[in-house]
Length: 326
Image (cartoon, rainbow, N blue to C red):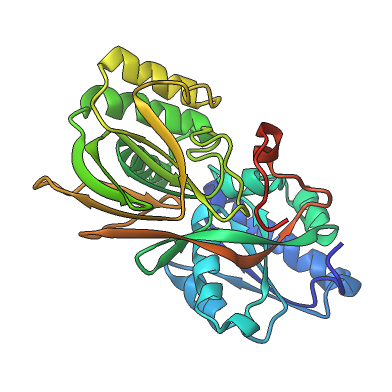
C-alpha cells in the first residue's frame, strides 16, 4: 500500500462526468473521507465548473501529498498538467477515481472505472509507481495524442456526449469512427522526423500513445506500457481503400490490426510533425481538442508519481516488453 497513506489529500471532481454521475460520486467521496479520518491526514473536495479549472486547482496545490482526479480522461489530463507546472520537489502523487466515458488511462493502470466504492478501495490499497508522460509542444498527455481521422473521431465523440448521446465508451467511438471513415477519407499530407528518420505520407491514422488504448478501449498500440521510456506510435503513410480502412478500424478494437502493411507500428522518444496542406489536420490530446502549426513530441521519462492498484502489472509485459528502468 502507499506508504503513510494518502496524507493531505485534494480531490478534484468533475460533477458532469459520466453523464452527471460525477456529482453523486463526489458527494460519496466527501462523505467517505469525512467518516474515515484514518485514511488521510486531511481531505478537501473541489468541484470544477469549466475547462481549465482542474489545471489551476492542481497547479496551486503544493501543500498536498496526494491529488485525486474524480472524472474522466479529460479531467485526469488537466490535473496531470497542473501537477507538472509545480517544481519537481513539490509535486504530489496522482490518484484517480475514474468516472468517464472512455476511461483509457484507468484501463492502462488497471483501475476499476465507474464504480466509486471499488475505485476508493483500490486507491486506498494501491501502490505508488512512476510513469512516463508524453509531451506535445508545452502540453503533457497521460495516455494519447492523435491526428487526422483518429482525432476527428475523438472530437466527434466529445460533441456527441455534450449533446447527451446514450452511447458510451467503445460503442460511441465505433459509431463515430464508421461515420467519419465513410464520409471523410481524404486524409492529410504530413512530414515528420521520428527519432532522426524522415517520414512522410497521408495521415488516416496517426496515434502517439503512452498506454495501449484510446477511444474507450480500442487497442491501437497493444504493447504500449507507461513506464518504459518510450512512446508507441501507429500511423499510415498512404490512403487505404474504404473496405480495408473499415476492416482495420474493426480489428483495432481488439489490437489485431498491427500486422497490416498499411500501418507502421514503432516506438520513439522524439518526433516532429507538420501537415503540409492548406487545411489543418484535427488533433486531440487525451480526448481534448488541440491545435498547433507544428508539433514537437517527446517522452518525459518517470515524470509522474501515480497510485495504481495493488499488484498492478502493465499489460504490455505480456507481450515481452520490459521496463527499461527496472
